[in-house]
Length: 321
Image (cartoon, rainbow, N blue to C red; front, side, top):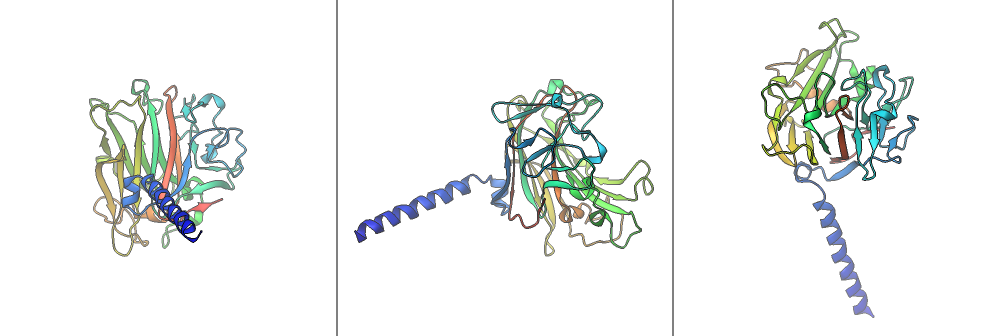
């Protein structure tokens, strides 16, 4: 009997080891290599995960976007598929960021509160999607997977105010993981990944809104030449925060292979403005922000997303409501 118990225990240990290995194998290499082994967000798209009724109650993974005073998207702007994917179809009168989004955090109708998860401290975020590039008309928008700081999305003044600057002098980051915005003459396998360091007093420091230090001069990313966008592909974005004098950075991934250069910054601790070319802490505000995930597209530009996942070292830096 004792030997039998030992044998059963040994089998249990072996099975536990296999389970642990299987769980580890499920972590993509870009996340695992950065120490991000905890899957803090994983979602397909069903009536259980998407707040189709625009109730804005907690418990859903995705909400119909209503930030910045925009009305939630109508049912005509999306289609839930039996496979657990969603097809965004866009809507008249709105370009990207104009309400045709699903997101992991959503504001209440009066904009006074929000529910969901805002990610902080670093992550590897990955979306699996497909679309028809022939349908893309950038005058009406384009397929996009991106993130905005919840500090800006929900206008959290305490998080936006730049310490030591005049009242209303704000700063926050925007990270555009994927935008299919082909420029004339460029290959169909190109897309953009852009970092933004927004700052200033709205419509005063810079005309037309916020000032913008960005990576527009180096934002092009190139998928393999034979990429068929009508088949599912994974687009990933790795964010590693600066710490103890080690620079922070972001890196784009296509089907889990790195594409394009890293964007790096030194640790930002409130140095005086402005950010921009030659300032080594530009984009360092990223490490202090908490990010909301967005998916959107242009009118009649079907964008089908199968899943979105996030891996982190820990969920301690996230804000959950």
